[in-house]
Length: 138
Image 1 (tube, rainbow, N blue to C red):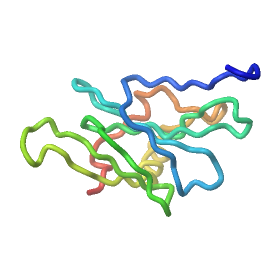
Image 2: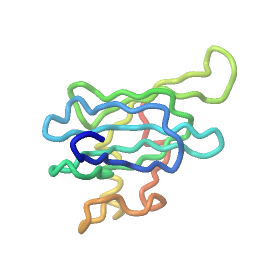
Image 3: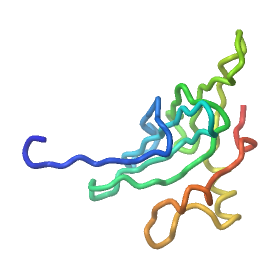
């Protein structure tokens, strides 16, 4: 890279097909990304650039039952984003779209004691923060 600068990386468990900025988060540089696994349950990661700009921090890790083909953040509420996904069926009903309310998931994570590690501010191991598809709202 030019000028001696280094890049910042973030690893995902599965391949990602889409990434979007969180438009309504005016205080941070935040992104959401969705994975595309044919065999396993997929994930949506909420990622924030640290204030120093030197690392990417996982702010949320949400389970998604289907392959995620596209996603978008709500332009006026940073707690909401939508996904476009394939159900694996053939025909007209193959693609679906749902909106996710992050506040519901954050409440569930707080009540269950799961979510971010208080000391590091990073996500606890991914198995501890998995949620079920019933948190998705259509």
